[in-house]
Length: 277
Image (cartoon, rainbow, N blue to C red):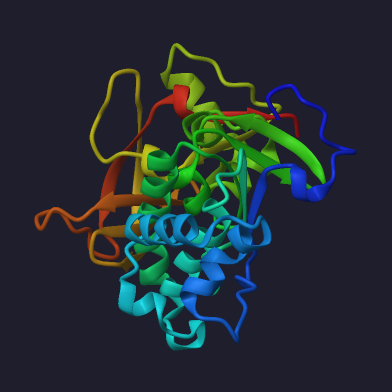
């Protein structure tokens, strides 16, 4: 931390804030008392502590009425904000979040992701965020570290980790992919100036297989086998040269492929990621 070795520094002096997966709030205390707990331990003057709690509550959208309530009376999202406030009010150098959204329903998680990013940006605190949710990691992070059995597989920006995955594990773990069989690789090589290695495994992201031609792309014909409609996007399963390839297309209200129809699909070899078999 700022090039300072803190391994042997007492825990209370490390200036690290932690938000646990279960929040670990004090059930017998009010929201105000929970947030002010660290200040009380540090023996901060009462007036100053109150001012800091009110300021922090304003930043995370908690009202004075909510501050007077017992934490058990709050919703899951509000309790998550209280846990964040309790950690951040101590102005830590590093904030550690252990899957803080995992106990919330899907819609609330998406909403609070934006709140977390805003709060972190406004307060300027370096944040270490642990999550198994790939979308959460890509959305919230400036840099992502992907772990596999305790070993780091890749560190990079969300764009690098997603589009230039360093290993087969990262490629398969972050997002959804198609594994291209050798027949398709040979066909791509036959129709493209860019040569793919036919001896290595090849993966491609669903959204990079397009229904419109692009610069350097190769045309393959697919037979629609199935589709999954989710409102904004539709995921299609195509049979291409005896293999199933999945694609994702944004629903524009015009294009929708019926089961059994034939569609021209375009693959740019530059978007194919390859790894040693």
